[in-house]
Length: 479
Image (cartoon, rainbow, N blue to C red; front, side):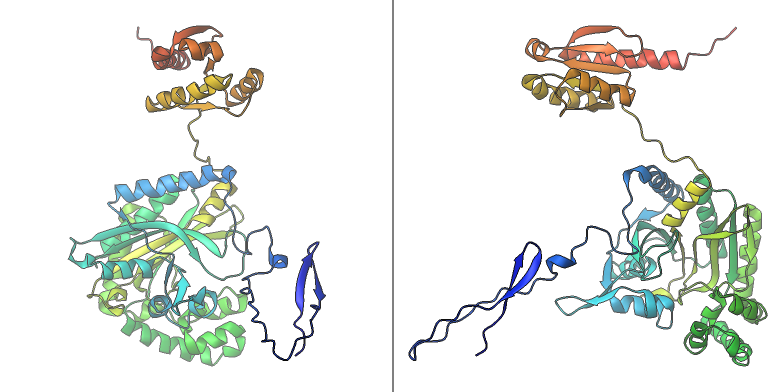
């Protein structure tokens, strides 16, 4: 038997040695060799960096994200939406059945894999399919209509990373179930505008269209294919494939030659059934009443196949006329039934939070300002350090925002930290004060200080803060 090679890691370099073999006697039984399980990755494959298309949202960016989160939550509360959180991982067939094969998301972008248990699963590429699954699974159809649900979190698409577009991207998602009236369409567009406007973005435009029912859509697709078939040599390679699998997606292509060709193509609005046409007309009247900025884009189809009737997108533009997509949505009146639920009309939209934050930075929108601590707690000595933890807790319980530097030893170093924070009050607790049950309270504005008992510390601090607040915001004088 050929001796088995053993790989030895030495100074991070692999070397190969042959084991020394002893001469085996005729009566000796062959040794049973236990081999270690193969590691998932080798030491040489480890990289201290995030995957391509993934990223860290660092602390200095969080003020922008906090403003977005607060705006989403406030709008959800004001419009009567309840939060729902759905899993990041779902069965693959959920997305295939809802989004459909022939779309870029399913054919090219979805993160699908098989678990060790043999299940075919996928990272969610969007929220609505998972929310609809939860709606059906938990019997929400019995609840009073309309049902409004809101969620935020990451979604995943294997797309080419570029500015404002990542493979792990964050979305805010809103869905309304159980109402077909076009006033709901107008209301969700109004809500999307409210969120964007509250975030300080001003050059906003909504593009709206109607793609009708599945029946009217089939009639339109036939007319579109007839138009494109005679000129398919002018299409890009991807759109030639879409001509067979999903013709309406050609209208969403950004290649110049495809845009020029489809600008002359038939429009979905000309093939609408009477009910869809009346629905779209009512929607436009509601949008006019709300005085929302919108344009009709007859080429707008969206990238998900479950849409019916109303579709819309939200765009921001700069001074040079360049446009940036911030989100979009539409009706999906047949999706719940297609996934096994009762026939239920529905409408929803999603906002791309990464793109919104990028736009906030580009247009120099002010980020959220976190409350700054007004009090600093300094301590000297082991006993004072132990006592300071209780004082810190007492101040926080009474609504006083306090900071500290427990790891710093010298008072001078701690006072430098206090100066950087720009606090109004510094509390000093030394060995003597810890034994006496007192603390030194220094007013950093006036420069005065006093020694108080620890029982009266909170009241003394609040008194100084109140005085400083009245000095910075004096009461109005009346003649």
